[in-house]
Length: 427
Image (cartoon, rainbow, N blue to C red; front, top):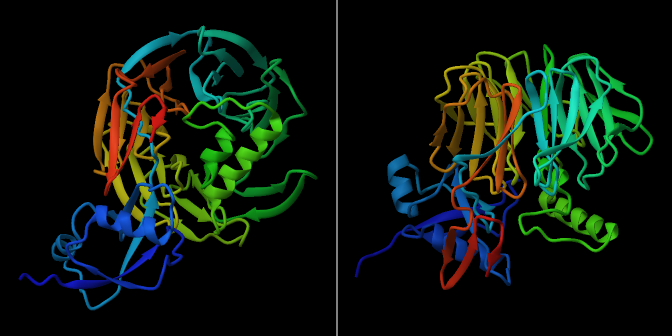
């Protein structure tokens, strides 16, 4: 009888919290066996899919194969990080379904509403426009900025919109009326300020960057952005129910650890912070050769992606800030990036007039979408995963998949999860 050697393993979540005491596992155990173990230890009534990582590298083979390939000693405890996976899968976009014109200058920022039904866009014509995606017609044109509108964000309930301009000011809008709500807020320095929102008090100032801070992202960005809305498209009966579900989603995403913040700057670097814990940065992330234009946490909080004028997209560990991989293929500045809702795909738009889809598991190009008429300044992937919107010159292009209803399945022992790409799932 062939003898199977064992290896001492420590299963931890992404925050480093041990699931149980270290345990001996047979070296022929692979991801499927580890999924069974984690579901048993967590006492999950419904078996969930997990992925496993050793030193930021996903485990796709039996432990023995990994140990031999990477020459890892079995005399030390092997740390394995388990990460819950989305029970739905987003398909890469590959065709244009609509082109929307209206702005008089290039569109510099776009953002889907939390329910994916509306779109906001900011432009070099110093206006913000609100669009109905069903009819592909404008709802409102919002004016008040004094310079290019560089960024846009919705509140989780979709009842408020905020836009930021090159003049260093923020303006809040009422999307139901297309009118300003409140006075503009202004800033123009190299710091990050953390505010207490109910009283408007400054509670922390984060210093470290040597030039303008271009972009920031929270580890809870996705659930904060979408609130109670998710891939199922559920409709809620009251605002109270929406608030309850949104809070549950936020607490589940946040977990027991502090929220993390990543910032990207003209100084070519990123900083990883834990603002609730300290005013000092946790990790200084270097490697880009030109300014960092956009940073973005993945929806599951596991990864940070950064886009730079050096033409590269870089992937970082969202907990430690360690460098993981570089995606190269663009031949111009990379302006913006966007994650699929399942955290498996990353989208990038560039000065080279292409849109590229990257596979996080393989760390390779999944799909190249060339042929756009102008530089791709702004992109966004809808929270339900069905559409991608991008700026193309002075117009807006909406893209979707060829077959959003194609099924997938994830097998775990005798339990199978079925679903489809339009956000609906059956178990």
